[in-house]
Amino acid sequence: MIGFNEVLETNAMISQEKLDVRTITMGISLLDCCDSDLSRMNRRIYEKITRLAGDIVSVGDEIGLEYGVPVVNKRVSVTPVALIGGSACRTQEDFVEIARTLDSAAEDIGINFIGGYSALVQKHMTRADRLLMMSVPKALSCTERVCSSVCVGSTRVGINMDAVRMMGDIIRETSAMTADRQSLGCAKLVVLCNPPDDNPFVAGAFHGVTEGDAVINVGVSGPGVVKTAVSKVRGESFEVLCETVKKTAFKVTRVGQLVAKEASRRLNVPFGIVDLSLAPTPAVGDSIADILHEMGLEKAGAPGTTAALAILNDQVKKGGVMASSYVGGLSGAFIPVSEDSSMIDAVVSGALTLEKLEAMTCVCSVGLDMIAVPGDTCAETLAGIVVDEMAIGMVNQKTTAVRIIPVAGMKEGDTAEFGGLLGSAPVMKVNGFGCADFVNRGGRIPAPIHSFKN
Amino acid sequence: MNRTIITLVGKDHVGIIAAVCNYLAENNINILDIAQTTVQEYINMMMIVDIEGYGKSFGDLCHGLGEVGESVGCSIKAQHEDIFDKMHRI
Image (cartoon, rainbow over all chains, first blue to last red; front, side, top):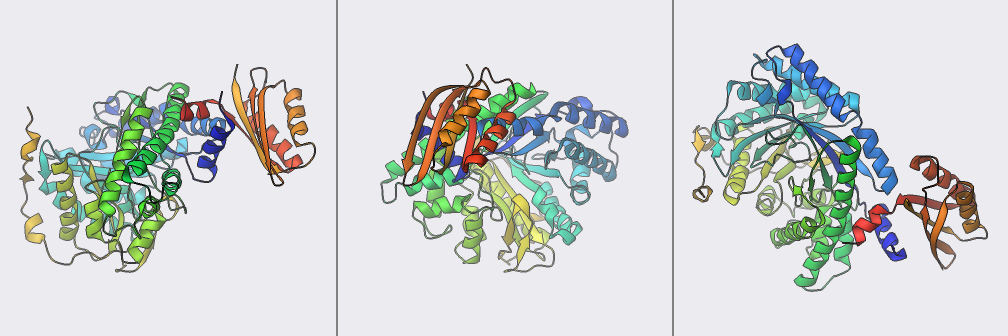
């Protein structure tokens, strides 16, 4: 039988250390909604999403109540829209209509974000891919809940530089079209390399083509829990530190597994994976940078930060893998700047730069995430930042992503306020030297030699 | 058997456990185990109960216990046992 101390430990994790289930995400295949008639296709998309995910919010809340652990977000990801829109969409505006359908389905089932307004163009682009990509600025400016992602590279096939260059312009245009909201559109747009098919976290979530009709994926969290555990082993060796993180990750992931199985049973949708990511929020005490600080760094960004993050990422995986029957998604530590109060503090105090963040992305689960840069950063420079990150992902056979926000009208040192979970971001300094002749070459970067494993 | 953990924390005074137990008895909820500690003037209590015979929803139970908690000046929480079991047992 459960002991008093075990109950107290779990409840302290929830009430004081902000343990929560960050998201229950239902992946929904829209492949069977394809139609040559746009309005018929939109009807099918709306009907399928609202039919399968109609109860996701109430079920998430019920589970949260019964186990006493907050289920913060309920979300939906769909098949990359560029794959299903080809025969119905002849213009960018046709694709925007699909975005509006996704937005209204998300609103009607009561979720805050829906992912999958996406294109997978790591090798080449179809006409539909290109149309969807060009429609992203409009789609993100006229919808509230739709998130977009574009995969421009993979270890297997290399990097599509035409797409990278286009994304430079698309990010700038998205920024301009949402200038009245501090360029918020860019916070819902992510450029990816090696994206997983089962990622439950927006903005990069989409329902991969290898998935079934519908699936439940769950993202756990708990930076505060890990930080508290690490604070109890101050001054101890790396062996003790690593064991502590591992054991804590195990406990956190077990909660995710429980919630995922329960959500799957109640919604009658198969369980997919638990994503082990440590995801911060702007709330005090829910910070990845605080864990790094507790590990012995004065600030995130100080020498040693990359190693500390590597340890954290690895131990979270080692502890989490045993706690869940299926692990997937991004699974690691997220380092979004705007969503982590101590990361913001590190940037403001000058400890953390864009270049150091790039180094950190070599060992964490994602990439340059929620980073605000001056509004006048040119498209070529944005493409250069993107391709650097894609190269890290391609060569290291890992997921990398760029979610960068050139905030219209702002310059280095200003602060952009996005509100809610997206937080606020100090505008960071960007290396001003040019890379236009490099990114404008066009074509593809070939796959790295170690991708040829057959 | 449908085991639920009830936890209570608050400033200690006469009648807190009695109030909770009365509520449980009135609602056909069987107590399987009780543990409590009092540090300085604060009480910390945990009960394992069986809600098999409770006819209403889990939300009603939380709400009912919340009202009892308010009447005795304590915070009372009910959670399914599974969350503790999964976290602390392999």
